[in-house]
Structure formats: C-alpha cells, structure tokens
Length: 172
Figure 1 (tube, rainbow, N blue to C red):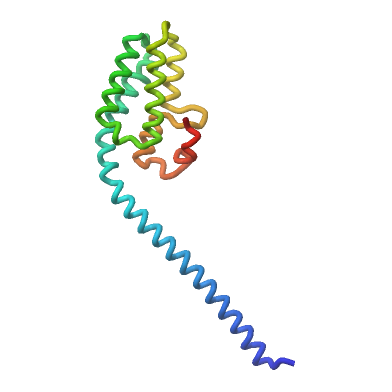
Figure 2: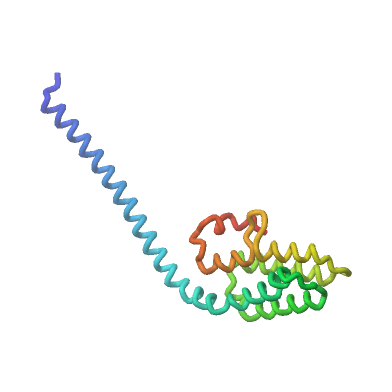
C-alpha cells in the first residue's frame, strides 16, 4: 500500500503540472492576442494616409452616382443616350482622378458598372425600366451583393468586418 504522503505528493505534482500547462496555454493565448493587437495597430497607422485620401476623394464618386444616377431615377426623369454618355463620361473622369484609391472590390464593381453602361449606350433602343433597375442594383446592391454605395462605406471601415467584408470572390 502506498502511504498517504506519497498519494498526496502525486496528486500535488499532477495538479502542479496541470496548472503549469494551463498557465502556459493562457500565456501563449495572451501573447498572441497582444501581438495581433500590435500588428493591427501598425496596419491601421499604415492605412491612415490612404483612408485620409479616400475621405477627401470619394465624395466625387458618391456625387456622380447619386446626382446623375440614383436621383434621376427617383425624380423619374427621362433617361436617354445623351444622359447615358454624360453619366459614363463623368464616371470615366472620376476613375482617372481617384480610381487609384479604390479598394479592389470597389474597383471591380465600378468596372462592371462601367461595362453595363457601355452596353446600354451601344443598344439601339433605351429600355428605361431595365436601366433604372440595373443602376439601382449597382448603387444599392442586390441579392446579398453590396452596391457601390456600400463598398464606398466599407472602404472607410464603416462595417468593421461584418458580413459586407465576407466572401468577396463571389460578389461579381
């Protein structure tokens, strides 16, 4: 038979090893969290100049999308070839001026929108209802895919990694 002192020593040793392992694991987790926090802080500092430039520049894109796109639809104005050409040319100039600041998801959606406008320009007839629907979908989003307005806001960090920053590969 084992003496009670030996059993107590074995239990104490086992508890000591268990506490040491738990302490090590918690310390490792704490270290990883602290390291990730420092990495995020460095990234944020590097991102700040880009964000500042976007804050200055994105209103140009926003104004074109809203004034020449969404507001015309809301006011039920007639959309014709001249309007399509003007809208496309203003977006093209905007791309030349600030396109380099667009995030990849915003630029991909913007490029797709520009291609759709070119398709409308090249059509023989104007289908007002279809144009209104497509423009509204591109600006506001559809079927779980973000619109240009949401992507602009996302570039400012407005959504803090919520669903909008999900699987972007499936957006386009």
